[in-house]
Image (tube, rainbow, N blue to C red):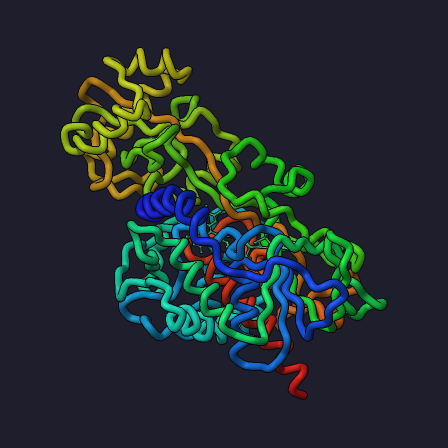
Length: 490
Ligand SMILES: Cc1cc2nc3c(=O)[nH]c(=O)nc-3n(C[C@H](O)[C@H](O)[C@H](O)COP(=O)(O)OP(=O)(O)OC[C@H]3O[C@@H](n4cnc5c(N)ncnc54)[C@H](O)[C@@H]3O)c2cc1C
């Protein structure tokens, strides 16, 4: 996560400047009352990869409607981290069974960690299998487009609740350290624009899916125009920016720092309400961020809450530590270290002190007094922690003792951990071919879903691996398009 966050920070800063200058050339106005074979609503990763599949493998006339001024959705704000590109799999991607296993294990681990009850949620393994069977296609499209993936960097192995995910699932940052995600997006949009059967409309907000009973007939845009089409792919993303949906489905995350674009307003959910489509999934994916500009939390392995207790194995992915803190309603959370740690990590400490991220105290007592932490319990926690490090065993939390430093030498440092989130799981029910179902679990003829809008069919609560969101979006966008191609070729 640490590396991921660094990449993310760099890309956030660079994208803010780069994205405003290099606008892709897209068609600016909508065609009133036009007809297309396929209308894609939303031009994020899922919508773009749906268009790519249709462009490369059909003669169907395809229109993408994107409500923002540019394609990309959340993509330009990500760390560009995506699954399947690493030494052993690049440029091939691994077998789709591997991806199914990843989601299956994740489901089981979420149960083991007590995050979900078995009866609350089941994953649609067939959907995952079908989507990732096609994952080589968007990967190839991105490689052909020139998305600047380095050859084989393999920087991120995740510790998810104790499981270390394998090399296969390790991930690669695109063009790390430069204007990563702008280049990522630009390469895709440049290639899409070269297809004569793909028409891109930006500043084009879709407000309704038109239908004749259970069959799709078109879409309606905010400007009043109606588009006739027998096939609509909804790829509208998550709900993080909808106050109404966050209140209803993820109230606990209100007040956490939200890193999405402002475009994630759950429009796909709103547009399928008239079909009484089932809404699935709760939760959001996030982590801890240091209180200001250094962003990456202190790398110490001693985390406590306001009661003065440790509560988690600090080596877990911060997706997990932050979720545990959230679900156990723990607050006032700090990473703590002492001068021994500072001596071993002078650059990190200096940077954080310069940026006012770290608070410095000459005694543990004054640390507690100033931070509103219960001192007596804190002292016991420090003693137990020091003993665990000395004994090279930390049975309570199973922390690898080589990671920890004893807390003994003044001054002592504390860094507050702030919660952030960037992905939400609430979405709509789809079948194994990415077709959207109505309230009676019947296929709505001509209506498909892709990306974060249907991620709820595969995951609830938390995922382990950076790259999951973009990869799932690319795979399911391709699947939705592929289902349409199969239908029309019959
Ligand atoms: C800060 C941040 C960092 C992230 N880092 C990573 C990472 O490194 N790796 C990873 O795998 N995932 C990452 N994610 C998650 C990832 O961004 C998402 O999972 C993925 O982009 C979802 O793609 P999508 O196409 O489904 O949705 P989105 O990217 O949200 O795209 C949806 C699009 O639909 C458009 N839209 C919505 N409603 C309408 C409407 N009514 N009419 C027309 N258009 C509409 C929106 O404007 C938007 O462009 C990150 C997310 C954030 C916010």
